[in-house]
Image (cartoon, rainbow, N blue to C red; front, top):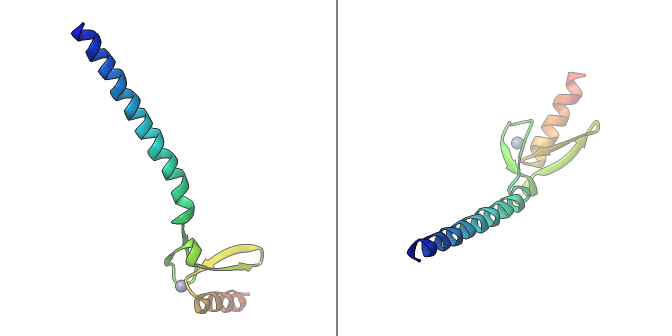
Length: 81
Ligand SMILES: [Zn+2]
C-alpha cells in the first residue's frame, strides 16, 4: 500500500512539473514581442522595438535609436549612390 502511495505521489509531482513547464513556456511565447530588440544600422546599437524610430528606406523596414540616427543613415545611403 505504501508503494502505491509513492507512485501516486510521483504522478502528482510529474503532473505539476508538466504544468509548470507548459505554463512558463506559454509565458515565454508572449514576452519576445514586448522585449524584442532591433539593431540600429547607423550606430549598431540594440534598441527595444517599441522605443525604436521606424523608417522604411527603399522598401526595407529599419529601426533607429533616434531621429538623428535615421537622418544620418539616410544621408549615408544617399552619398553612397
Ligand atoms: Zn543610433
